[in-house]
Image 1: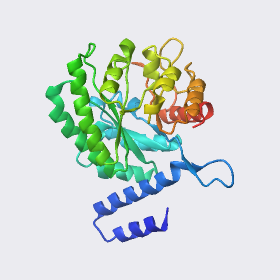
Image 2: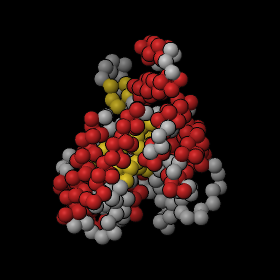
Image 3: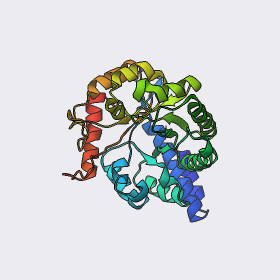
Image 4: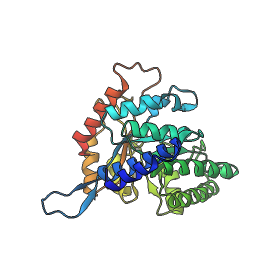
Length: 318
């Protein structure tokens, strides 16, 4: 931590407890980011710095059995487990940010476990123009609170229309995305398109429709959902790597089901890693475990996260 950061925290001690907590969290997150997001290039004389690919954790596996997938009741367990697993950061789910006290609660946990908030996932029916006002208001609240926590990425799903979207629906989708992108840019939060299967099936109809309307939109593909949509992740990276700033990582067994941890499936992450290094990928990633319905754990989730983190380091070099 820099002397300037220390002085800032010391000065904050005369403020209210809440203001002190918030200023401390922001300072620690800033200092942590400065130290964890870059590393010196090989060679003693290297003066230039290269951004490190941050490997975060996404809490879906904790949210799946909870009402409305709200991780708020188990936030401390999530932070504790992800810190133990050696993850660099945490990606939240947006509903945790909708609670009025979210910034104070999450900020305290981020400080306690020395685990920065990198961003959050977010999804809405953006193709439905009748929902745009509510979506924009919700997105603005989430982005504002995310900025207060030091987060910088918004992994966005555009909603499944249960059919191939019409040109009019794709127009509406692009319209609200542009507004969210602009608001995010004003707050230092970059929107990336996070895919499930519906965005990339039918020859990538949905994704291609958005790219045609917003050519510079950033992508945050889920490599496993690509596999489940019969798309080769390596080929996707090759074709879309210049748009990619984020990605989700998860493994899959030969029979198509999810294993308990990464490294217990058959997805070729060595090949994906090689392609990412070939294109000099400089975005970040999140390990997002998922288990089939009624799956019975054989080990604590924190151990599966730790195994997954080590697997990503070993196979992908991150």
